[in-house]
Image (tube, rainbow, N blue to C red; front, side, top):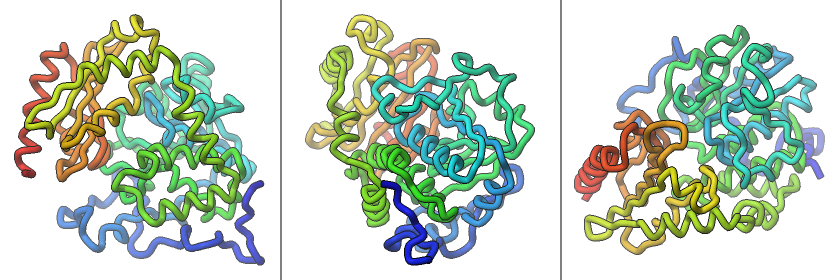
Length: 380
């Protein structure tokens, strides 16, 4: 059953989750925005207030447009897909026209999140010249490299351009940024937006947003999980999300190929620095030989964090269509993964980040591992 936020005649959500943010808001064009002062680091007591997004301005932009194009990053995960579907549900209820178009297809193991199959793929379901609308919204990324094939569509789009995200770094996308880097998932921001727009969250939206938040917090294990995380999760349960079903769809529907690939990943695990650094890799031929697909590498790196004493984990995944490796970093110490990834043109969060480096496995590892080892040494 959908949760109607107009409770007792008040346009408020039960509980305090969706209370308005305080302080100075940010929602400016990427070409004219005020940069964050260097002294305003993530641990500063004013950070959360000064870096909160401008909900009123975002609502105004949405109300001013009738047709929307939504997209997210390549190799979409649950936060990307769930945020898109959640926002599409909001726009549907506002009477807007909505298309979700991504540069990469939805991974087979995440297809459950889109039962109506409304997510389109550029070049497969629609061509670039067929895409138009009043507003283009990028979700869960602020980087050109992550937008992939949809980047040219964004550059040539003649309408308004918005970006809703929770990642720290950003490129000049030519959009208005609506970001809260304290949020654990973009799905949380979409849930807040529903409240701000007085739009009820129905069961399908709740399922998508629950999956977005649960996966981006490592099923609520990561340090980004807060009391507000559990508040939004409680609201989504009231809206119809069923955790046991979502968990089953995510983690109890593995293919034999996925299991075999993970076996190879774990068998190649190498530990250095007395076990503080753990890394492994995947090669192109592994996919064909195990019957796996590229999306089956998602979250595999988290398995290495189960090794006692591990502080930083890295996985090198050879790409099928690019001459190089996708890097995923994980940290459960003071090492900042977003800074590591930034050294190689990537980005993300302190505890989890990614990048892409061209070259052979030996070449890439020789570039990356010394940087990681130095980061561990610096924080010891």
